[in-house]
Length: 460
Image 1 (cartoon, rainbow, N blue to C red):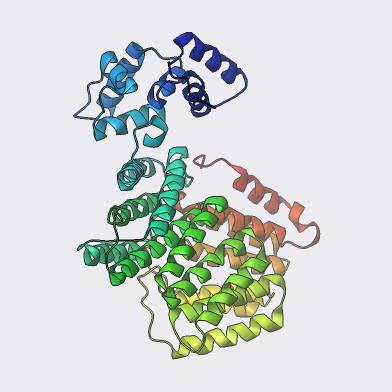
Image 2: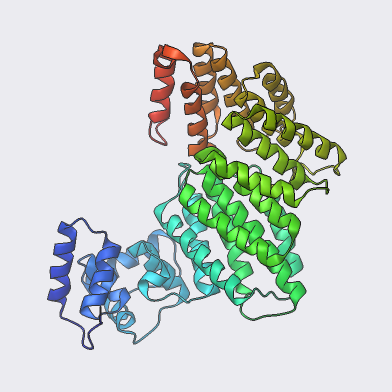
């Protein structure tokens, strides 16, 4: 639609707002419509979409600033009017306040840059969102920031990655994040990862040497992979898939074969939990073939991931072959650190063996590796111990111990801290019910577990 050369009168925007509200449109959709039809700025369209006068918006913005202890903006109606017409440009702290007030991004206000500054602002606001949200789900505004950051990262990769003299510091911070990732709740981790990604992008304004470009692209691949994994834990498979695609793009650009294989092996977890299983097998197999004849954490991880997915498909023969291969690789590879999200320590290897044996119905073998693995996890950790307990419950279901299986699943679910009790935990607990044979899925214990899993987040 062609934007008019002269803005329409406020009555036109009011008619659009009333009509669109009646149709169930969101304020953002209404603002877009007003901006396109009436020829007003995006910032003014946001206010008109909510039926606010300049005086009302100014008063509410001042109250919001006081609530959040903003030292800066004391917004008046005439200031807001000047920003809306482009007469003046608000400071960065004020843009952040406007984003909070209208619940949107700087781009939605027409105040965002196309590069790193916009991403940094998104990421900083995301930290505040994640720190105040302990429900284990993604706040809507953080979701919008995730999508914006991924698109900005893809643009930076297409233009060529660049970094300055702070690459060593960036890599040190990234290693700390990889260690922290093992025990930090995923929603909170997302905000930290976005901040680090914004820092990487801020160095991507112009090309430098090939070696610098490779290092920066490798960091992008690692960060994108961890973001994708966090989103997978939170049950957002659509966004997770998009970030895994970005991670694969970055890994391909880096030319690092080990990293390319690692990203594929990590990406195989998404279809393993959410389907289709054939994609999990394919990704893990690609990773395994890339690392063939080179014993490493990634090679062992890829073989174990393929074995687990094959077992879930019911392909016992090939799963056993991959288990033997994974064990051989693990015995030959250097000792893997147990404090890094990109490591593959023995306890993690046992987790994958547990999943394989559980899917194959080999409960005694599964129980043995579950007990061994649980003894190796530190007190401060993520969801792996819970997954092992839930697999033990599935083994009980296979053995027709329906009540005991459901009670163990319920106990495990309740013991997981709320900010770690994400949809992936709920999905694995539901799997216990699905594995109950015959009419056992309608027993009292199964019904109680089902009711527990249907409770809204934060109600326990």
